[in-house]
Image (cartoon, rainbow, N blue to C red; front, side):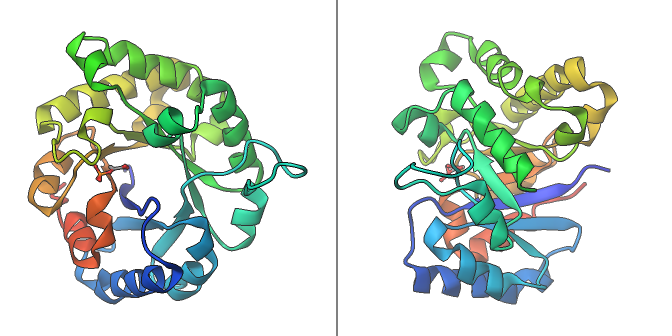
Length: 252
Ligand code: PEP
């Protein structure tokens, strides 16, 4: 049985005080959602320590939104995977399209970040997804395949067993446009095929999350699809009520 995961990417939102409040509200409402759903909250670095404290023992895990490609040293402004893991953080989002687009993250950087994440016991949530022009040109399968082959194919089987993948079409992120459930299923099934080509049947155990304007009103339809194992949620993760309601969207 694959994990069912709802992960919240808070991006650069909330002050630490507001973030702790949000995390407390998620903890308070968690009991209303099936314990079969794994919730993860990914606040900014500045909030991680406090959010780990308030979520401890609640069944809500904490993730970071990024980590450095290097282990330590003269890299002003960077935050290492070791620093993150030492706080009790369990996950790290890597390869988000905003990191690829605004901070020039390439597969080379992402390979190094993945290594750092695994070396420090963090589970990566590796994001893939095409831009609007790529989808319109019918290149979305090629784009996503390359993002997987250039990074995920370099993992060992042991590392792959821990991986979470998030498919996030860039044209659906923060735009209010959502992929249809059919579009999501089509490409999630394709992602699983690409993973199967390298890792065999182990790919059947990989959680593949959908991300892109996912909200309480559309989550159930998308999550009902065979190869969609949950969501990576941006805007709707900033309201505890909506974030938890998305978790109620599982019917399988
Ligand atoms: C995201 O950026 O990971 C995301 C899915 O954002 P949103 O839900 O706001 O589209």
